Length: 487
Image 1 (cartoon, rainbow, N blue to C red):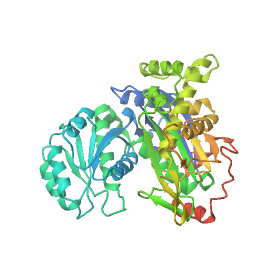
Image 2: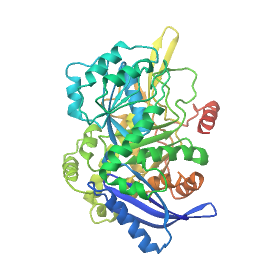
Image 3: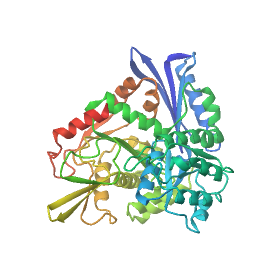
Image 4: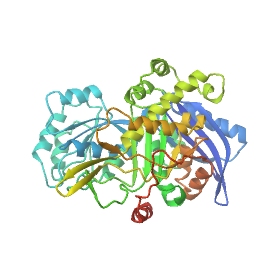
């Protein structure tokens, strides 16, 4: 194996992206880039076609290092249960989003008569079963375990609740595939999803990868096959460490089935007069919108973003019934109609994904004066936004982000009197060569080199003002918080 050459492939829901990098003197260069349609029944086919094409065009005789990730199927579907609604969804999303999954439904309290029936109808890949702090509530957890015995046998159960009854839960669910991990809420106001995330990643390999032809790919690799979202999540951490000039930043990555948003920033803007509601937000955060995709979920994205354009909705319905997006229209001026339709869909995907990723600020009057209550993550301090993904990379149009923010602020479902804590004056870059998932793979072995190459190939476009602000409210203490959190 010649480690000076690195072949990277990301197997997506619609396309398999690949390239061959050369690494010399701690510097990365691109030798050849090629993509192939993803064949969902056999994911190895696209990988093999890309590898053969790369080796043929470059003439490399020695076997290169092989790295790969996959987001085929849009990730594992996960349903979850817990005792408190808000905490259950928070834990499920955190565990799923750092391991390549998507939350399709959450339940709380004791299961009702129709809940198990609904879970069986949803047929998620994983059921994340939580409840109680360690040494806390046992009765409700064991009652729910008894009811979960009626789940379909092909739904994997991850138990991440009160550890004092873990043995009893496992015994009750012995006829199912039940994996016991650390409690996601070991104590009040402390969230720990590391055990659940690791279990989800392992299930990804065994349930999706090996069943879809990725087993052949895994045998060829020189590192673990990672879910694409986890690979990019790790890459975001490397960017925060090795490229401080971009900090604090967001990455927005619409795919064919989902739209992912990553943010690397402190949870708050450093204002001491703010009261925080809910669990602490992570420094690096990922959210995924399963109903907002450029291809399979284009219609859902438009409806969720309240974009009621009948011509575009009709186009989105037709997109769903095609095998792949017609990217030729994006690269030429010959079909402005199709380009405009895709532009509207991309705006809807970005709008919804960013709106749901963003925190909120409510203001209340009290006997002690006005109180500001924050829930979720404050993104106003974001200084860099990176637009990636197939369409956003090809269209090279950063104005989509401005339109998406306007639409997010005007969404009718926003709480009255509530401020969305959206970015206000960022510099917007476009990943015009769609290097994000490929550089993320290289960063497994050479993080600093991969980050440098990625940042060198971003297309710059400064947006001076999205909202009237000079960001003076961002204190020096907050900037120091960023520096310490990123280390």
